[in-house]
Length: 190
Image (cartoon, rainbow, N blue to C red; front, side, top):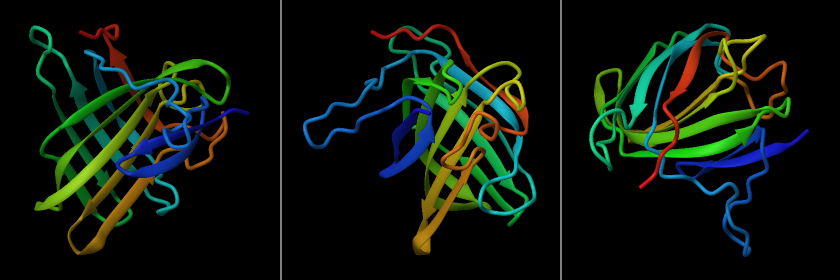
């Protein structure tokens, strides 16, 4: 089984997928992140690990959909964790990065990471990093293994992380329980 190490907002996550070396001891990230003028949409639900037994729902649209190069970056993300009642809403999308990936079954997939500012339960002052993986149709298990990950930080040392697959995950455990994540358009860069 292959593993991937992916950096999100200062965190390092160990994921099933492609080997990624982070810069440090002379190594370069592989594959390098790409400036990608595509866009990604998704929605669905999963049971966040290790946070509880109830569902979390998410819906988002993010990336470069319209306009001449470089088209304006735009997006939105809503997320509700029914385990604790947290309602998260992105108020900005400041970054959008594309990665190629290989899933736990050895298939190619598309990985997008984005970040910005957010509200939690209507209160401002939060930041987030999200990572979404488009890995097969339909997106949910057992056929597809689309994946949703969200990290939120904020006032009073608030820290939250949810992952639809857990880490590490296997081909049978990775993925959202319902819904779909879709990368649209071919990745183009300037």
